Every structure is written in structure tokens, then in C-alpha cells.
Amino acid sequence: MSVTTRLTLTDNLPLTCSRSGACCHGNMVRLNPWDLACLAEAKGLTPRVFRDRYCDFGGIHLRFDGAPGWKKKPACSQYVTDLGCSVYLGRPLVCRLYPLGRQSQGKELYYMYQGVDFPCMKECPEVLDLPRLSVADYIEEQATKRFEVARDEYLELMQNLADSAFALLFDSGLAESGDRQTLRLWREMGKEEPEQLAERIGSEWIDLLMIPEIIDSLNDPKAFSRQHYDLLISKAQESFGILDNVTDYCEASGLMMGLALHLGRGLGANPAELAEHWIKTAKEHGALD
Ligand code: SF4
Ligand code: SF4
Image 1 (tube, helix red, strand yellow):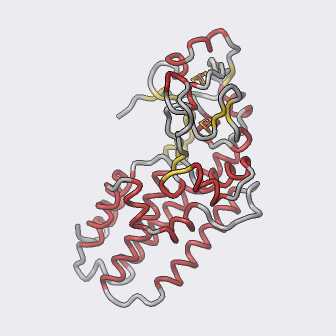
Image 2 (image 1 turned 180 degrees about the vertical axis):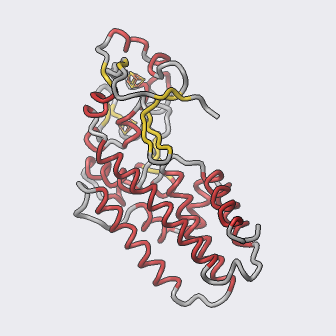
Image 3 (image 1 turned 90 degrees about the vertical axis):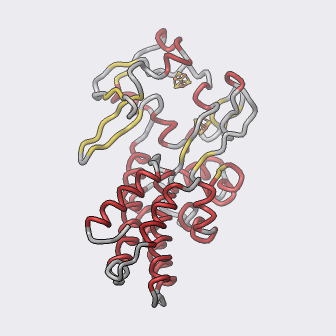
């Protein structure tokens, strides 16, 4: 398990960025659907065009295919040499928070950084000569609030998708029938590479998961994610209305779980661990593995 340093809002740290561009090279930025919509708006593109030009795996990763820069590492697709981030106003939560991270444990929420040493010290030791900031002031300056709300909303949406997979397993009589295929399918999907899982889910569902057609709620992540959930559930009801045998229910449960796992990866979770967590819960309720 990786070590993290837990912070309080009054901790004073060298949080003024030296703007060397170190973090915008050779990194990985994962996205949720709202992050993606904000990036697209900042770039003046539709989410679909932004996703197709600049993201991988249906939209859960921002591509890092720019010209090699910092230590010859490839730049983020949004990085412009000598200028910096081209989508600064719509940059995702992970970019706003770095070098900090955010963790929730039950109802408790806190900021932290990875490791024991302050992360910027490795690439940018010059930060020690710049003004220090409290964690609270840094968070305020980075305008993270809406992005944090969006992340929490999408964590809930992910759980709701997984709950739909559970409902298709238990309420249909599938689990009771002695089925073992469904949990195996969940496990298999958890271990798949992101491109494999995206391919298995299929482009129609991936598009609905990552680039939903919601146009007027970008300032309100709660309204955005709730409209998004309604769209997903109404497509599921349309698609699953005519299921009548165990294979159909197994596939439908697999699809909802696949969506939850793919979204989970975009939220920074490990899909294999998520799948095992949900398999354990299903087994506790009587499903067979
Ligand atoms: S490592 Fe720290 S100081 Fe360097 S570019 Fe990233 S945030 Fe800024
Ligand atoms: S989105 Fe902007 S801040 Fe984030 S890695 Fe890319 S260039 Fe850097």
C-alpha cells in the first residue's frame, strides 16, 4: 500500500507552482464525463470532437501525445510549449489539485499528498523559494469546488450502475438459479485492459457513458450527473425490457458492471479491486463464484 501524507486545511506548504511544466509531461490524467465536458468547453469543441481528438479508451484518459518537453517526456495533448495549459479554465480536478490529492473515508474527507516528501521537491526544488500557501488557500485559488462535487457525484453514479448489475443478478432469479457465469464475467472485466473493456462495452454505450448529450448543466455538476444517470437508466430499460433467459440477464448484469468498472477507472479506481469488492458483496448475498 502506498504511503500518503494526510493534511489539514491550515498546513502551510510550498504550493506556489514554479510553472516548469513538469507535471504536464509523461503523466496520466484520468477523466470523468463532467471533466471531459468542461475540457471540451474550454477548448471550444463538442465533447465528442474533443474526446476523439484528445482522449483514449472512450474518454477516460487524456492523451499525452504532445511534443517531448520536460526531460524529453511527451507533453499532455493540451500543453502548449512556453505557454502552458491551453484549457486552463476547464482543466480537470487532478490537475487543479496536484501536488495534492483528495481522499474520502466514509463521510470523512481530507487532502493529502503521495509519499512522505512533498511531491514537487523531486522535479521542482525551486518551489522552496516561492511563497508558501495554506492548503485552504490553495484549494480556493484552484477553484476545485465544482470539480470535487462532480467527482463525488460520479462516484455515486458508478455505485448506482453497479447496483443495477446486482439487481439484474438477484431480482431476476439468476443468482438463485445457481449461475456462476455472472461473477466470473465481472471478474474478467475487472482484469481487462481499458481498451478491451471499452470494446466489450461497445461504442454506443461508451458514448452514452462518457459524452452524454447534456448541454445546459455545465455549471451544476449535480444536475449534470443526475441527468446523465437518467439517460443511462432509460437506455438500460429500453435495452433490457425483453430479457427472458439466464444468458440475457447475465449479459445485462455484465454490461452494467462493465460500465461501472470503466467509469471507476476514469475516477482513479483500480477496476480489478472494484470488481473483487462487488463480487465479495454478491457472494455474501448468496451469489456463486
Ligand atoms: S511539480 Fe509542482 S512546481 Fe513543478 S510544475 Fe508540478 S505543481 Fe508546479
Ligand atoms: S490538462 Fe492542462 S494542466 Fe492538465 S496535464 Fe494537460 S496541460 Fe497540464
